[in-house]
Image 1 (cartoon, rainbow, N blue to C red):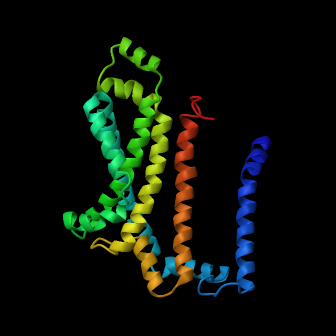
Image 2 (tube, one colour; image 1 turned 90 degrees about the vertical axis):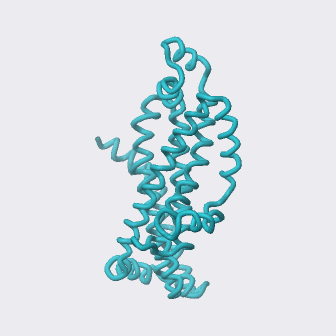
Length: 263
């Protein structure tokens, strides 16, 4: 037990020291007045803004609203990517068409589609969710297809020998064998979806159902509240770290690392 605790401390110690060094450097630069306090607020101002954001400015509601939009768009995007990537393996014609679409649409930033999305879906939540789905589907599909193509032929032969074909072969062989690539695609899709959501909310603003973190950032900017902006950025980072270590890392440890597919 003691050895495990020592190992855990050694594992996180470099990150903790790095963060502490960053905090000390921040305050040192503020005290040295290298930049204007408007651009580089003190840690005390950021701490006070943190308290104000959650007690007065209802920042927690904005976080929940953004996460709600993100969850819906992310789940829909993952489902579409898995479905279309699976069909592309079953049919060579679908593969050629879908691979071409992935190459085309993966290059288009979500913000560039925003004006069209407003014309198609109006000014409600559907527009933002569309941007999130667009941000997820193409990079994730690329990872899934690459994972399918990298499966050793002997796996496919073994599946065919036990009678698997079509969708059964996809679910019985392709998905398990390429799970590391699929999980990697979900991680990339999550990051792209998060950035797409923030961009959409900053451009779009609030909807009739609520306002998210992106709108909060724009609102703080309009009041020249740099401490509030840093609070929003810190919250975005914290959410990303929690998802990375609390969700994806746990899934990796219980699946691909346990199976010996990943170091």
